[in-house]
Length: 209
Image 1 (cartoon, rainbow, N blue to C red):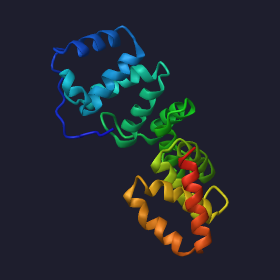
Image 2 (cartoon, helix red, strand yellow):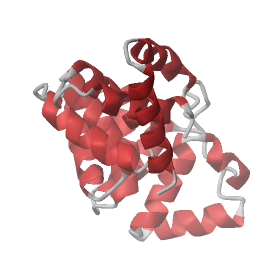
Image 3 (cartoon, one colour):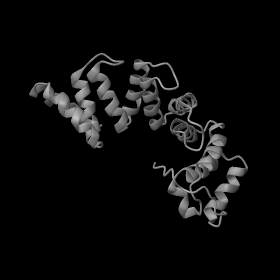
Image 4 (cartoon, helix red, strand yellow):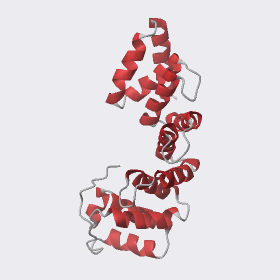
């Protein structure tokens, strides 16, 4: 999901039928419609519906949905608070929202919560909790979480140091994230051909599950 921060804050009047229906549902308290409207305002997805990006409006509608415990809204609103988009930057509030969404299985929120635990932004730094949430998101295929989990195993942060586990997760992450290649290759150079082969086989087996 891409946010373009410089966009103009305008709602063009619900000229599109889908926007009219969604807005009407949102105003009557439908949490899914509130989330959809908030997402349209937060991203460029709303332009085909006649909605221009407005991060303040996005936060307003996402809050209404999040207060009804709708996990996707909690996750996206958490990102707005983390980045300070449409709302004052607030890592503590971001962490609370990410946790609520993460506990309901939103993978991106699990990954983001792991980052906050790892850095200590908005909460007490806790590398073990960071690894727990990275693991949950990594197991569901989140490449950023796989990268961070690989680094955790590489450095023994929050988990017992395990170079083979580290290389396995870095191998998986590198298949989708170019930035991971350097860290993966540096680790691989420290390992024997047999260790590298086992890590690669483990990554292939994981991907085929």
